[in-house]
Length: 108
Image (cartoon, rainbow, N blue to C red; front, side, top):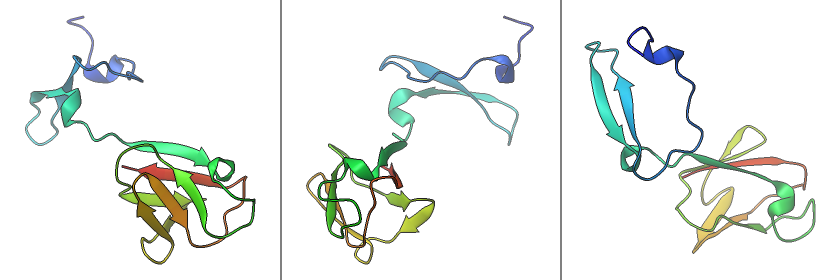
């Protein structure tokens, strides 16, 4: 292991609660220990077919189960809260038409 650089390791897809990460800092070439609790949860991807209602309808709801959406993207376009969607409890309601084959990404 002494001959390997941090860039030589394979990225972990699903860290466990007790795992920690070694972060290489570009600013001072030092290393820092990071726990899973310090990592932003990230993104979840959906298809429009995960929404209630029919393909091509407006006001379709998407249940995201938990977490408040920070950024919502539909087919690569950032959707603005209030104008493009509303959020209540665990449901994003899209105010414009959503088709079943559209890609939806939610950053939490």
